[in-house]
Image 1 (cartoon, chains in turn orange, yellow):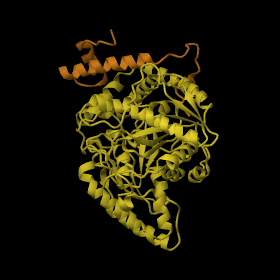
Image 2 (cartoon, chains in turn cyan, purple):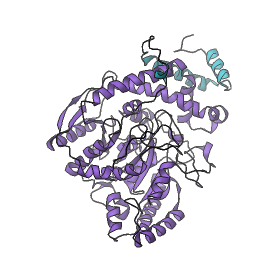
Image 3 (cartoon, helix red, strand yellow):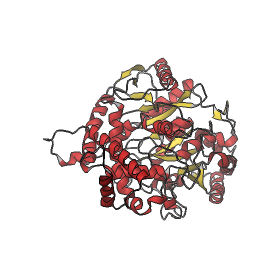
Image 4 (cartoon, chains in turn brown, orange):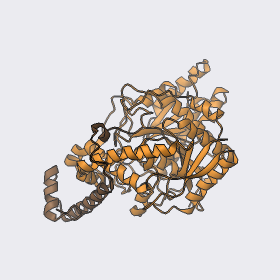
Length: 63
Length: 475
């Protein structure tokens, strides 16, 4: 499944999965745009080394 | 049309906290005078500017009378005794509605008072009311005029945006409808209204100020902050609200200086000050007035004896923004998921839109963002070790007109404020001048962790040398 171009069926399935009713056409299009935006933003975040397994690195807040 | 006026044209309500406090101590004005002046100003501006959601006129007057009696008896509690202030409507005050600007909260009566409001009231400050805000202090950056309260408007030009999410806070201070205000800052929500409305707004170090009693937006980024007319006013408020709180485990037990005394004693001579001019690949173009006024501030500081040089961020601005977006979407969705699923039709478009984004973030991306955040924080902190303070324009544009949501959204998302929300560093948004249309510009002063004092010293020096804080929106 492409994360950048969800089909109508994929969007309807996503809504079911998180507990929303099946979307109308306008909402489905908005969700398609959101999915692309969110996926793109997530992919721009660099991954730290997979050998860095210290668990606390995931959750410590800054400062 | 801009409506600027030179000199303190707002009467008593336009006094700085520092000046009002001095007049109170000399017996020239009373807390009742100050509260009445602010309430009159609220009444005069509310229909046009929509700054307040709730006005506590009766309790404010009662407390003003009590403060007046105490002060007359020689029981002055401190520099904020008798000073009227207001808070964004995402803070709880016991017995007062907390609406968060949302249909979902219209009947929510608070059963507790936020720690920092309790501290301010114990210091004698007088709460005037609750200020306008984006829904739950969050959203997608757009304004759709679909919330239960009309949108707050900019006192410099009511056709313009106030900056968000603390929409009423910056505008109220600029308009003289409160002597200081509390906002909250997750991605710039104190500094952006400060910048849009020409006031001074502090996002302190993450962990410096208690969030207990403040509605969350993004747990790992939320920081409360004061908006004031001057840097010295900000120092007075910070000294009261900073410090560890056993009810908020994110707060750090770090000594809190007397910020106002430190500001008065501080000097910029000999400081090393960096200026960020290049924000890297994908950064927005800055309107000329924003960059020019930042350079002007650097030049003034150089004239006062600071050593000024160009500073380089360790990553492009969009890296900070994207990292914060992934974290903020996720945490915000986890906070509002139940309401989104059950009552999304009661949410405004901007919050619904953000919830949609939040519902789609993958756990792997959220965790990658938090891990990358640590790298960005360490690299940014390493850069900060070379400087006492680093300057950059707070925003890439002045407050835009309502209407084109692509532009309104860009005011938030093309700003530089996400940097310090990712890393946790303190940043003080300071008025730096005006553009050709008379709209305020702003520079944010970033310093090392828990060194808010240096940012205040730099801002105070700038005010004394170049911006005596005389131009106000016309009454």
